Image (cartoon, rainbow, N blue to C red):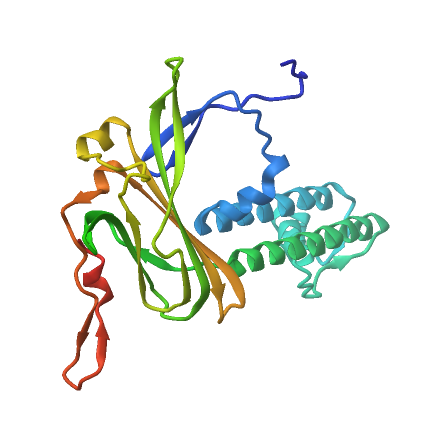
Length: 291
């Protein structure tokens, strides 16, 4: 494939898929073309640090324009650069304390450009912060290990998770996927995924916990496999849960992946329900997440 000189090939990137790390090479990556995604996916310390760096850089540049002018700002003692930097901060943030103000056409022009930049950047920052805060999050606590044992007389793969908020997630749906390495008839190795049918894949009102059941019958890709077979095929499991959060009035999603070494054979989850001293039903979610 031909590429133009303006296209830039990035350094190798590490993509993590569950417990697997894939090194992606040769991707053409532009920092500014995907800046909104970077702002949304960066950690809060990195996001705040980047915003502070941009704020300082803007003010430093405008302070230089004030500094090289012929006294564009009134009441600047000695015309020091640091004083113009302080004035730039007041102008860019639209604070405007009033002791220093533009007094020439040049100063008014630079201040007008900086005010426009400040209004634009503050609006953009407000939108990014609101978008980061308002992102829906399901807050589901997944068990550390899927388990395989008999359920209703049949070997069954089970995965348990719980709603940490204890609010209602209406019309919750769950899907369980299997990923494993296979070899085609031509001898080519590739990774294939299968959706594992669940006994129940919908929950009307998820408030406490939910255990997913996949029966290991003849139609199951896991039928007759043991721990060694799972290791040889580098099996991974992916659980995807979505539903309607009645408090946030938004659709929320959660995802958890497991490596083959996380699967426990012959184990069961602890019982989640018991009776308290006053006769009420008690849910012990924390202990029930351990096989």
